[in-house]
Length: 130
Image (tube, rainbow, N blue to C red; front, top):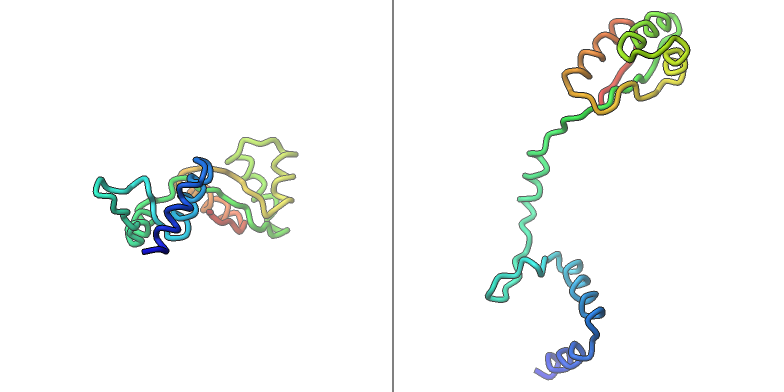
């Protein structure tokens, strides 16, 4: 019991800032959340399986369309498709096509990304959705 009394005496000498740092350190070291302590004073350990399930439930809704590769013989056809999809001028579209791999469209729906991908692949481009 003297070990506990010694720890208790040490705790009494801490400032509020030091006590807050101690609580944070205990939470990190033992993977607990003191703010979720019940009225009985018991600390509830987080259930690791619940966090895995919640990660699986969240489905990605925004996708980036990336122009990965443009074969030289197909460059003009791909350039025309890029212009029609993006509304860019000839010079801007040419610069984009020549700088592949490059993000062509950001934060688009999966449907739109799939449609654009198929058009670009028909023209001969290598495209990915991320």
